[in-house]
Structures are given as structure tokens and as C-alpha cells.
Image (cartoon, rainbow, N blue to C red; front, side, top):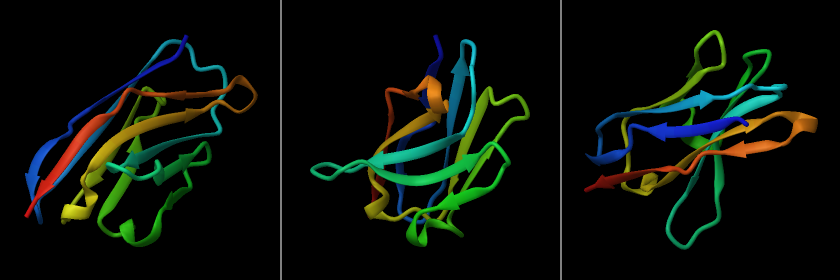
Length: 116
């Protein structure tokens, strides 16, 4: 069964950078897309960025230009480079694998805290 494990979160000052990593293990049966989501305290989980199987990317709102999603050639690892971080970027960040008919998998999340 496919497992996703996030890493790279932590505490950073506003204006700083972090790179999140999502490691994929197990046999991927199909890929529609992989994505990063985040959930701030008291808020709903929201899409941050998504990379589709044709390598097209989508970013939510104003994140494009500050955040960059990428992956390795084998879909074994996905990254989220986050620059110019703001206090409002504080959240738990989750990676997501959309396998279409075969379902969606989530990681356990990694915490990002941006201090002022």
C-alpha cells in the first residue's frame, strides 16, 4: 500500500524559506496528480499546489511566485519550496496522491510555523 511521509517543516522567521519533502513508498497504481495542502488552526484544509501527471502545475491564490512544487522523475519524491514565508503561512502541510480510480492517499503532515 502506498505511504506518504512529509518532512522539512519547522520554525522559521517571516521572510525565510523552507523546503518540504514528501517521500512516497509502495506501489503507485495510477497517478492523476500529487499535491500539497495545508490546514491552519481552526480552518479547513486547503490546496496549496498541485502537479499533474503531465507536469502541469497549479497554485492557489497568491502563492505562485513564492511557492514552487516539483517532483523527481519517478514520482518517488515531491517537493514544495516555500520562499518569502509569511506568518499566515503557518499551518500543518500535507501531501496528497490522487490515484484516480484507485483512491487518494494522504501523509500525516508536517508543521510549519512562521514567526514575526
